[in-house]
Length: 115
Length: 114
Image (cartoon, rainbow over all chains, first blue to last red; front, top):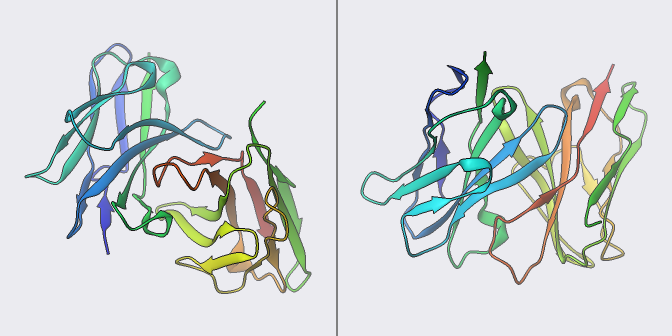
C-alpha cells in the first residue's frame, strides 16, 4: 500500500512571494500523482496531475509541480501567490494498474497568504 | 452544469437518530465514493462504488452503510450516529474509464452528532 506525507500542515506567506508545498510518497509500484485544492467552504477540485511523460506538470491558476522519482516527491510551486490562493492543498497518489480503490490523500497543507 | 450535489449541507442531530446524506451526480459517472474530512487527518475514504449494485469498504467504514441502486445516486446512511461521526463529509464521482484519482467533489455536508 502507498502513503502520502505532506510535510507542512500550514504555510504562511506574503502576497507576491513564491511558495512551495511539499509532498512525499511511498509506493512499491509506479504511481499517478495529484494535487487538489479546497477553497473555504467548498469541495476539492483538481489542480494538476502527473500521469507519465514530462516530470514538470502545469496546472490551473499558475501552479506547477515536479515529479522526482528518485526522491519520491511531488512538490507544488507557484512563483507569485495571491490572496485568493489561500486554501488547503491536498496531495494524492494512486497506484497504476490498481484502480480507484488505491487513491490515498495526504493530510493537507493550509496555505495562508497575507497582504 | 456538471456537478455533484449533496444534501443536507449542514445537519445537527442526536446520538442514535438514523440519518441519510444524499449524493447525486449528473455526469453519468460510474465510480462514486464517500470521504470524511477531519482536522489533522485529511480525507479518509468510507465506502466506494464501481457501478450500480457494486459497493466496497474504504478505510473507515464502521458505522456507515451505502447503497447504489441507480447510477446517479449514492446515499450515505448512518443507522445509529455517534458523536465520533461528527465530521465534514464529501461525495465524489469519476468516470471509471478515466485515470484513477480524477474526482469531482460535492461541496460537503457538515454533520454534528450531539
